[in-house]
Amino acid sequence: MNYKEAVAYIDDTPRFTKKNTLENTRKVLAAMGHPERRMKLIHVAGSNGKGSVCAYLSSILTTAGKQTGLFISPHLVTINERFQLNQKPVSDEFFLEAFEAVMDTVRGLLKEQPDSFAHPTFFELLFLMGIYIFDKSGMEYVVLETGLGGRFDATNVIEAPLVSVITSISLEHTEYLGDTYEQIAGEKAGIIKEGCPVVFDGTRSDVEAVIREKAADMHAKAYAVRPDMYKILMNTQKTIDFSMNTGYYLPMNVSISSVAEYQVMNACQAVTAAQVLEIGLTEEDIHRGMERMRWEGRMETVMPGVILDGAHNDSGVEEFVKTAKRLQQDAKVTLLFSCVKEKDYEGMIRTICAHIDFDSVVVTEVESDRRVTAQELSDIFQKYTDRPVLAYPSIPEAFETALLRRDGGILFCVGSLYLLGSLKSIIRSKQYA
Image 1 (cartoon, rainbow, N blue to C red):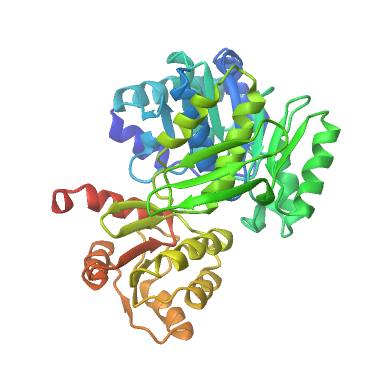
Image 2 (cartoon, rainbow, N blue to C red):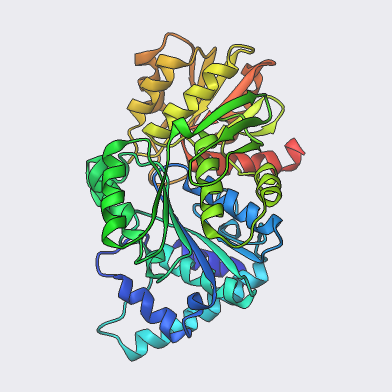
């Protein structure tokens, strides 16, 4: 099997199944010799910001000279992005090696235990490949981002992380995680392990109560990070400087390469988690790691005047509009939008129209069976705005149109990570080289 065939096999693997348990994943790890026990793990869950926190932590550790693996999801362009070694995606060859090694183990277990072992799901298979990759590469530290939830997430088979991080909670995946903040927080708090410290977003008191109760049950020290623990000093078109004083460690001034103020909370959680590790990281390590972090698809300027933001749920859109409102003061705004059907896309559109004074909007549809048609999105936008709304099912055509309508202003591309991935591929093509 070659690389493309391996990717196709993984893509055809079911995303979800009711029969797989964490014990199923543990069986594979046991057959592999428990490679996860040979690395120092940092475990990150949450609804929004967990990818950014993972990226900040990976950048800090790599900058400090630590051999660092990073496991994230989803990917934007290539599936290799999910496995990073010192902040660089793995090669196709290493990806294939990991796939074949894990599948050899899976096939052996299916043959030996046909009644009690099940084929891993899409995410479980990728997680197992990641563990193989990080072990074979000799990564000392590994930052793991959960997929869905926390308590039953495949990554939750790890036994003793150095620190767990729980980022902001929103009402997402309610069919799996519950329909209240407390219920969802309970699922995310399932990553807290006995005696292992946890850093968390303490913005909501109801969420904090759930996390602190779980931490107390697990005899784990809990470090809340709240908005009143930081102050923005300067916000330019490229960077944000802020001071942070959590009360746990000495006050610190930090600079991040971002225009999005929501990244300040993520940065504060990452810095706090880095300090909680107590592995000898210096303030200079943290400063340089934070400054060097680049996170694709999060208020990312990919071309002059073109910004991609992975705002794909209610909370994400609320944070997006805060930044867009500030930037629109100096330039006219054009919007390119798409979404998938399980999201509250009408609520997202309503929020955008209520807060952003855009000149026009272009809607399109992603290449997925979860897509919402461009026409349906157009109809919804027209309920909430009298500005021009143009619908193009083709993403390349929609992007070309949006670029023309930008006319020297700012083009925001938001609403779906699938959209962002397609745009990244288009921008990397010769047409935009």
